[in-house]
Amino acid sequence: MEYALEIRGLCKQYDGFDLRDVDITLPRGSVMGFIGENGAGKTTTIKAILGLIRQDAGSIRVLGMDSRQEERAVKERIGVVLEDGCFLNTLSARQVNVLMGKAYRGWQPEQFFGCMRRFGIDLDKKIKDYSKGMRMKVSIAAALSHGAELLIMDEPTSGLDPVVRDEVLDLFYEFMQEESHAILLSSHITSDLDKIADYITFIHQGSVLLSEPRDALLDTYGLLRCTADQLASLDPAAVRAKRAGAFGCEALVRRDGIPQGWAVEPVNIEQIMLLLTRGECNQ
Image (cartoon, rainbow, N blue to C red; front, side, top):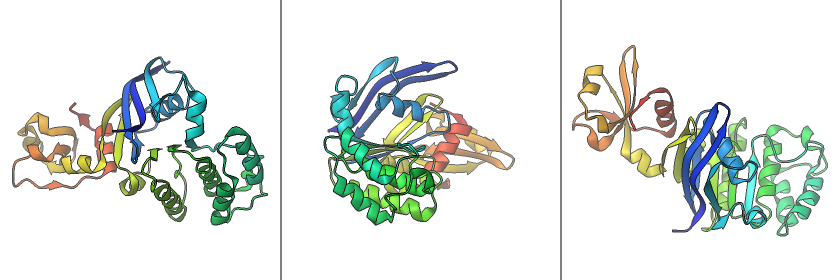
């Protein structure tokens, strides 16, 4: 299997926060949803991939290349979209085109301007005068306009209305029509990941708790609502996380470890994230 991204044993220590032994593998032709609460380590991991910070340990390979030793070649082949934008607010879209043409040998102005026309964006307005959705569209158009094979995005749909989010997801679908392409998508909007993600990686307090194909994850786990006594009677290996409430317990369980006849509900990505974050976890 060819990987667009391979992270092995990534560690980064700050005062009060440790990113510990992060392992992530993203196959080509796939979209990975990267989830976790604020401060879990998502942005730190992305900054390490992009070379914006130096890791303390571990290795990162992007499209088969060492991200440190082949930094320029990696930059040419990835597209980056960050929540706070990628360009100075004083630039216009025309100026972004000039800037990107200088930065990337494979820059495709016709692709960029085609996206601008599709989005109905005024090329001469300053970025500061665009709505948040427009600014994000400019960043996405730029990421898609220099022949990138891997998109790395940190909250690209955060704060966008549902119509704009659907337009953005359509762009991602189009990008993924090429089987060698891949996307790493960090997002709090798990409904977007329900639509597009092939893999889910969940990071919590600096450590990866799970990284699995989305369909296998949803097939393996379910949501059980029961009494405390019923929960205590289960094999501990069947219970991944649990939470007690005023009206009983709910648990993230492995379906194959639950007795026949017990009602196990389907679970979604948001429920998995909440139970692993706020519940009592069994590793």
